[in-house]
Amino acid sequence: MVLNDNYYIAIMAGGIGSRFWPSSTVNQPKQFLDILGVGKSLIRMTFERCIKLVPADNVLIITNERYRDLVKEHLPELPDNNILGEPSMNNTAPCIAWTALHLEARNPKAIFAVLPSDHVILKEDAYVEKLAEAFQFAQDNDAIVTLGIQPTRPDTGYGYIETNNDSKGNGPISVSSFREKPNLETAQKYLDTGGYYWNAGMFVWSVKSILSSFAKNAANILEILSEDKTKFGSDEEQVYINRVYPNTEKISVDYAILEKANNVYTIPADIGWSDLGTWNSLHAYLDKDDNECVVLGKETHLINTTQTIIRSDSKKIVVVKGLDNYIVVDEPDALLIYPKTDEQEIKSVVKKLTAEES
Image (cartoon, rainbow, N blue to C red; front, top):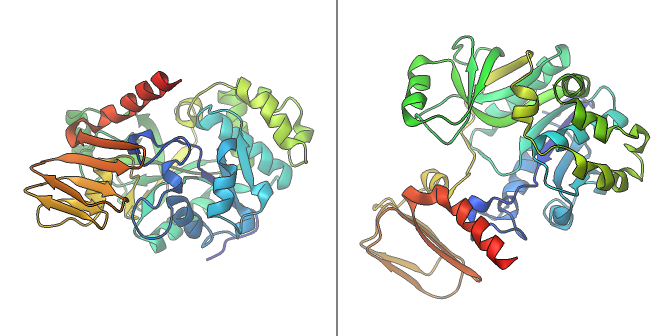
């Protein structure tokens, strides 16, 4: 199902994925890893889903400039000018504003989706159908459209979309608010009440609608990037962006736009979604043995070990005994052995290690 020529998809691929350390590093982030052991990186899998909806020429990759060669390696069929290299990591709002200005120069009628590069979708046919519905709605309306994931548990790791009713998946629903990651009691309340969806970070809008929203809700970002709009779509665009982009505010599109806009809609989507944001989520996603363990590696042997995920790509034999509820990741330059219950600390541990090295 290839949609019309005005439809584009922008894949966000600039993150470091520090919660997946030590497999994910600054030089080789999670989106470029075969984290599932299927022979394809996460960004490759995302791209292959996208070209079911739009041609490869209409897929953009928004990444940090240092990952440009990695993008080319994993997506060789992508045109070079479809890789937008951020000169600094300023969160999602500035890069979405840049993408909109870039597309406006290429096609003022463009409707584009913004999708993460490192999520897993099990029900791809349903995913394509829901995105097609979102594209159509964004084309016909001045609207910001999100895909909302029906919660299956009171998860405290996701932000929530609050809607005006619980439609059980019958078309776009007006969004009343976005809620930050809740505590367990609040998450359970959302689940019991109904009408709340996980915010998966998948958006669709027209260039016209999102630029209008930036002008209204985040004017400073737009003003900085629009200092000379003649540069967009030209050979000078990247050099120009390298100069002005670092001056933009470091802020997410959720804070800058979504929480302020009054034209946000969500389409409930049962698409077998996982954001694979942590080792715990990977453990939950993958098939487990009789002791609820996940083993990624050929020469790994477990003894009296339960509820644990072990990843080792090395050729040496790995033997683990007596662990319960642990993360064990063996990489050439680092070894992580950490309780699964404390995995939210990994990001801060990596930050501290990085600071000590610098």
